[in-house]
Image (tube, rainbow, N blue to C red; front, side):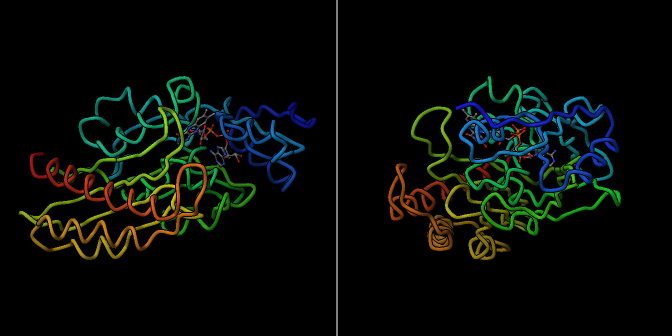
Length: 289
Ligand SMILES: Cc1cc2nc3c(=O)[nH]c(=O)nc-3n(C[C@H](O)[C@H](O)[C@H](O)COP(=O)(O)OP(=O)(O)OC[C@H]3O[C@@H](n4cnc5c(N)ncnc54)[C@H](O)[C@@H]3O)c2cc1C
């Protein structure tokens, strides 16, 4: 289908973009990579009257470590995570997530900011950002606002962003030598959205974890933090029984719905298995780093 008619703006500065969003309110939508918004417009699931294309705004594409954070510019393309050696070496959870998203054509254009802003629990970055304890920097008419990731996803396609706010940066606590993680995704075919997926990030203190982050993809209306599994593991020596129990708790704490990708029961069992696999890999990686 052809999208409904819209007015198209190409601001060249952040303040110009914010002014346009403020002026047009709910009628306007930001366009970054366009790989979620344009399909929705073509299916007429979204019909914004104004499009504010932010691709011409400079200095929003970067990956750098600074002030104790890994900072990712809001317009950074998925492919940049794959192509940055520091990400593969120090932030394997981010690398493992990026390579599971869609296909290279999509990743060349889609942005990390857009992936999060879309508020789709089927997207892969939201659960990963939960596991990493990220913060979202939203810039709007009143300047910058930092939103902890746990406060960001409010419902299906619904986030804490105001209509005139743009994600300008994602901040992740900088890797120390004791942390690592991975992303495990079950998909029907290469490039598909997850049947279910699990993001795990651990920080070790001796043989036990001092910190555990577990995020679940596409098994509820929002990405889900597997809180009880995290709490179970912290401060305890790692055993197979403990990992199994963490998988079980994660499968109980999600709320999948049956669809073409599988029944509710099947998805819960995928969550249990992937949680266990991801935890084992994350612990191994963190202990050998
Ligand atoms: C064939 C196909 C397969 C895909 N498979 C996967 C997959 O397996 N896993 C996955 O995670 N994703 C997948 N995607 C989605 C893809 O990663 C999207 O591009 C991404 O989710 C959205 O990023 P975008 O830059 O394209 O955003 P856009 O489509 O431009 O925007 C998406 C939404 O976010 C808003 N927005 C965009 N940028 C910002 C910003 N900086 N600040 C505030 N709001 C903003 C827009 O207004 C819009 O509402 C797939 C897409 C396609 C087409």
